[in-house]
Length: 353
Image (cartoon, rainbow, N blue to C red; front, top):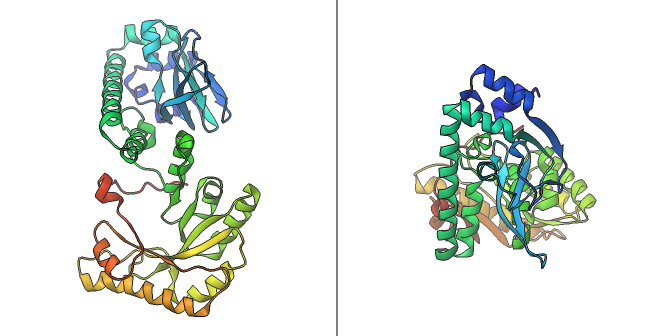
């Protein structure tokens, strides 16, 4: 990707500059590739550059003499960091480390200060960014004092999607990109990641590497891809088979008529521990239509149990979301998915290649 295109995509402030200012930024700024795990900036070193994440994911962290580390924040693509150190002309107070293979822009302090002197729009952008960072850290301090661990984790995850600080992220990523970018940030929290939603076969590598469970296994090609990846990782995961019980074309899942044969095929994959079934009910206000989806899955589970397929457990029924979980429980659900009721409605999914 050309330098100009990179800045247009990953620098919200770039389009505010004049052509002359853009040309100098492109000429002076160095763009480097950093492999996952490498240090981009070290604590204690003089701050000489303003950092922008063109692609990938980096973290800002601190540590003490005893080796204890703490991640302050994650910075995805579109994020620019380090202006505070440059403005105060001080040494870095934190490490900046690549969590994934990342492309990072390094703008020299002289260019940064030149923009401060010549661009009102750039100054306005920095004021908004600094104000947003202050609000973010005040909110984090409040959260640490008032909220339980689950709420604090949710807040940290939400921070990655701040549209002012990280405009390159959009408002939502596909679930496998979420796990790929967020799992490293919470590696020390001992979390088990559950992936829900239609999974493209080419995303199997992320699930195999990071997930504890997949709740949307619906085709043999995906099972084969997961098995290959999991064997390479030396891991196995729990899976639920997603069955299509709704007449809507937008709903994913295995056709009910193919469930028994699919379960028999899955029984030969040692890396996939089948634990039950999952479905998404019809998007309808009619109770009978929604209940029909849930009762269909329960009946399919009961029929499959009679086959007593070796290595296949069908103890779990994952069905019911924020708008219909009460009906799902009455129809036999063993677990429900109520993210919207807890965190609020999220924007529509942005497809990813």
